[in-house]
Image 1 (cartoon, rainbow, N blue to C red):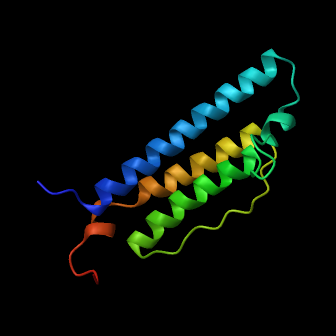
Image 2 (image 1 turned 45 degrees about the vertical axis):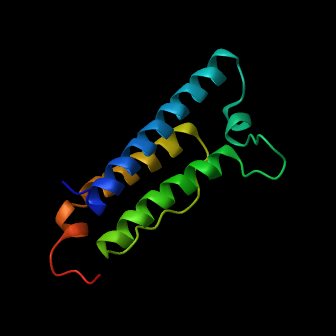
Length: 115
């Protein structure tokens, strides 16, 4: 049995986004337990030349929605990069997961699509 492009992409993107959401939950709980301003963690960088954590979440969502949209030959949804809180970032991830899951196997692997 061969692996379709849908099978190789959509489930992987959904899993990655759900994992990212779980990481946000853990970071938010850590900030609350340690009485750390959540903004500190959202703007944290592991290295000086690294993008802040919040921007990395935005980029991960953009890669997932963009990849799936391009495979399905549909318009990529636009999200403004205005998220400032854990809740904002989780909402962005949830919206992205909803979009990715709205794409059906036939949208990507359907017959009659150009190679």
